[in-house]
Length: 578
Image 1 (cartoon, rainbow, N blue to C red):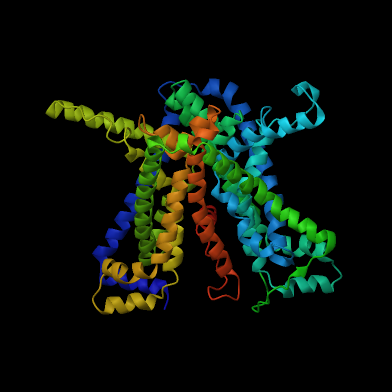
Image 2: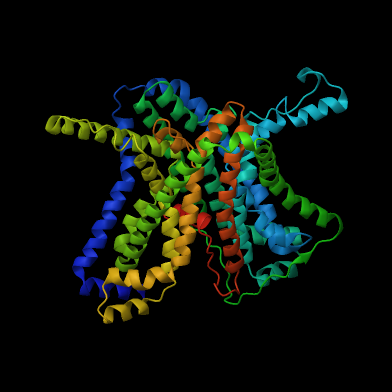
């Protein structure tokens, strides 16, 4: 029995309850879309229009830097992610099983923390250049050339080795789904392994590769900590400078609107790239591809290709942070650290709880109402495509105006001031986190609900249980594992979020992320290493979840061919839904 039949039955038996789900979905969609509407309104009708000045001075340079950074990072993640995914999926060499999950470890480290670490290592006073001067007798920087880490090239280097898992994860899943019969046909036609990879395997994996690159480029667009620390003027930096430096909210909204244009452009290009093209197998039989055993120089090359990204993206940053955390433990283990950790845990836990709860409501409403609810749920996912700095602009301005209106009414009626009850509290932060990461929870819950047979709903209805009781007594216990996984990922993403936190946090309120950023910006990474290491350790949890999902997702396992990766798989759904 199809879900459509279940939907029609539920709407016919309980029409009033069906309207409740629709109205609730409409309310959630309007709330999530409100920040985007606020950005558009502020940009089109600013109090002080500085658009001509921005268009002639700031936007050209910052837009070009943003474009160069995105393209450079896209090339980097493509090369690293595709090569490592192909080797791990199709070849046999020492350490392959370890690399299968270890390639995901850089996802646990925020890009801005990696930037702080490599600046500390590679600057003039760092250990690398110091060792070179000792070995060769150099005295000053004029005696030798060394690449400047605080540059566009440095930003591309750091982000490529942090964000390549987006391409690796999706591409590896695509390679796993390719049957050996398809590759064998190419070999029988006289093509070697390299030609088979270029002409058969790579085109079949092209949709996954394109989506992975688009996701990495969207993360590049949203980044603030790395580009600000490396003095690379991007559009995200421009939002901060115009708003906080010039005090012009309208100008910041106009730049934010340009950034949204970049997001729309990425999604459009990704969809155009797939338009009219289908990549699938013509046979219903799946045969697992035997792995090619590498020997000699090829074995060593494969080992290096997979090991270098892990070492650069995770081992070195985590090792440096661990050393600093141990050496400066007495200075870092204090009441301030506990306050930062408590703030991060409180915000992230609240965001995870609210996001997963709303995701359950949306996913179950979509299950009940079918296509009629689909448009509302897609609107609710839009926040994930919005960079944190842009979202902060859309949240803070309307909240501040609402606070002023409430305060004016309270003064007139009761003679008391309510203060900033929305924009001046953690409410704004939790709201921004929920809007930004709601898609993560929705994708996980919807995927799990889709595996529950509609006959179970029919049985519950025949016994007199309504939609709400069916959800509470039957569905939630069955999808409990996915709810925990989704909540964990929302929790960790909220802990790592930097731009929105910097803008929306109340006065004298710091989290682990803002503490690390402020101290590292003042060249005090050692004192904030414990906080940074705490974020990294928390980030390993989603990596474990993704690794388990990868093992279960290969065709021929009990879970079938559907990839159950929650975080990156959900980000792919955001692109697919537009």
